Length: 342
Image 1 (tube, helix red, strand yellow):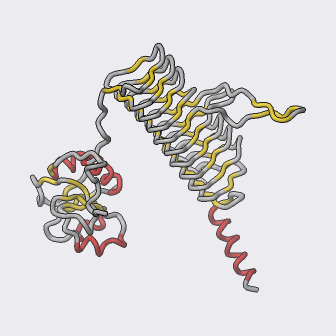
Image 2: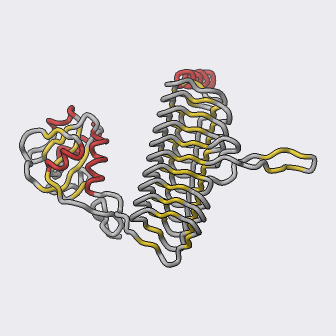
Image 3: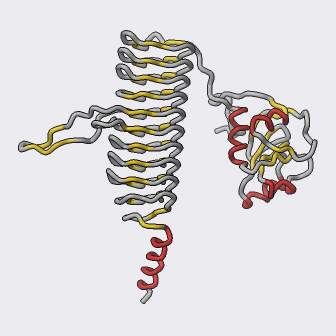
């Protein structure tokens, strides 16, 4: 197995080279001193592997020894580390170094360009409206009356149900199924995501369970990303809504009628039950479970494997099952440890 720098050109688009000035402009960076002006940089690399043609990154004091030995031509870092760069290396100073690093890395490795194409095996229904520069992959299916905005990508074997709407710049991964859904602009669905299927709703009759019609939709607002093999059920009577900029990791389940605000984070294997309302900037960590019909306030943080059975106040940090404030949880743990020693 060959080993090389990040961004293997067999798998990742490469751009550049770029001058130091162009990098600083893209990321809003402050360049310490005039050193490196006019130099060309070819890509990004970690501190230990970077050469003079690479930009590297540091935001953790634990890696300072690597900074002193790096051969990188430039390093993005915080103000506290700016005087630690070795001779010949340019300090690209940012108060938010990880954000700056993201912007520089995206400059060198942008998303693959969209090619206006339709594979001959794709199946396109009646009355479909397809915008400009749309790429439709092998064996994709687009149902009757669907609307696909400019610059969208539909991956291999993806299925768009009838009358689904995609805004401009959406990217639908391979094997995604999408129905009863309206998407804003720049929505990304990673492979295997299931959007708009029936919610988990049934009544109990004399002879067993009877499924309740699920008559709502899924609304994914601008800039939402949904990870591989995650599922978002359509609403029963109301819509399931995912707010603009929200990031949903792989293997997440969102139940019917749930409403997530702007820029929320839901980490892998978490589950949000039906009719739960989550305000803006909430973080739900891995394997957390939220029961239905509760309210989570703005900027609350829910810890890993947390069992949330009641409303969570805005700004609260909770952990444990049942969920409780962080300090209370760890105080209880400490008490149990003391008791176990007796």
